[in-house]
Amino acid sequence: MTDPDALVALIKAEPSTRGHTISKLGYFCAPFRPASGPLSDKVIKVYRGLPDAAALDRLKQCHDDYFAALRQCGVTIPDTEMHLVSIDGARQPVIVQEALPEDSLMRPLMQRAGLDDALGMMEAAGQCIASFWHGSQKIDTRIGFHPSIRNFAIMDGKAVFFDTFPPLIHYSRDEMGRMLLQYSDKRLMRLVGPLMQKRVTGIQDEWYSPPETLVGLVGSACRLRPPEAEAFLDWGRDFATRAMQPWAEEALRGMQEPPRLPGYWTGFRKILGLQGEPNV
Image (cartoon, rainbow, N blue to C red; front, side):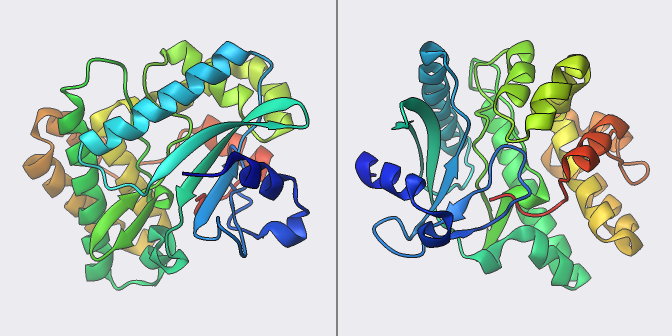
């Protein structure tokens, strides 16, 4: 169990002493891993607080429910807790997650691997996606999944998922659209985003669609390794047919050619300076 006082002290420590930042390119925060101490085997993710206490309490409950649902659906995920900690008089959500070896992150592994090994990693991630969506049919609430290449690690040939924020459970589509702005780490997004709320809200739609999550994974692989796009498309078509039968027809329609990101999302990422790097 995480000591709240130790967690607050760590967060308030000077950045140069609290540990190294794993990635500065995430949309919601810049996770870090402590260099030493009782939390040195954890990744810490600190998110923006809100003045609405009830909304924060709901966020934590939804996160707890989402973590439980992921495991219920057969998703392999490291031990993960959300805490609401008081920092300088304001409560902030903080996720404490068991750290994964940095050399297990799927995206850099995909960049270095031979084609056969890359397809093996896609199979591992695909099995995770299929397990989630088949399992989710027994969950009686709105639930989604964001299985991008940068949200997986590969360990012993198995995909390990580690992205639990925002918790894609219980919230309505409009509520999740607002959360994408409320918790953004980028001030520019919070300022400009409300002017394009409809488009911002649409970012999430892929996460709540079984066929589109598979198509999104394949699209990421095609963009990461363009010369081998046809091999990833062939894998995706085959996988949809044999492992995601209820949604296969729609998934196949999305993989006639290398899938592309929506123009508005690539535009947002350029404005915010975000790139396709691991955001653990």
